[in-house]
Length: 224
Image: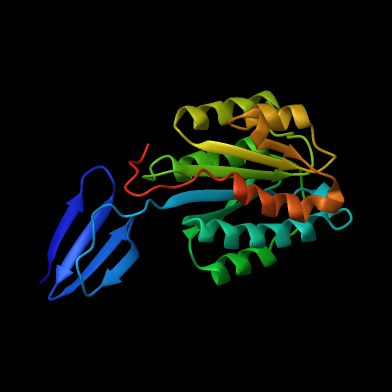
């Protein structure tokens, strides 16, 4: 049996067996080496893409752009050491994938998204909050939409759900098409500059570019 130790407060586990050392965080292998490694391992971030799949997203090329932009986002997020999960919402919210570094797994779920129903954003935010609140490290949700929320009590309910998530240390980035309410997007986001509105023709690029807004991760950064 190998020797095992835990780095306090960081969710990092170091296992030493023979001359090989494995460093893992949240059950995910970070590094495996045949030499000693520092406990100051770079933090892993967790981000959920929360994608509007309501009926209006099926108009024109919006959903296809959202799919392409989402996949591009995943690749860029992974390059910044973020694991990405996926939640879709229409009349209700559906959890599709836990945060992962496997692009092929996310791609399978992205391709299966289709447009129907209404825009129950409050349920999507609550579900994302539930999935992220116990993660250790930087946590972000990115809400992708083409319109205004119309779930129970919306738009107030979505804003209140967003406030709760932000109080728990979860950052919120919003990206919407020109059909969306920019003031709502800014209020829902953690900061006004993280609430972005683009033309429907630029939806794919807009979603892709939000990866640049993800907080920078640092070595040995403590979870919130």
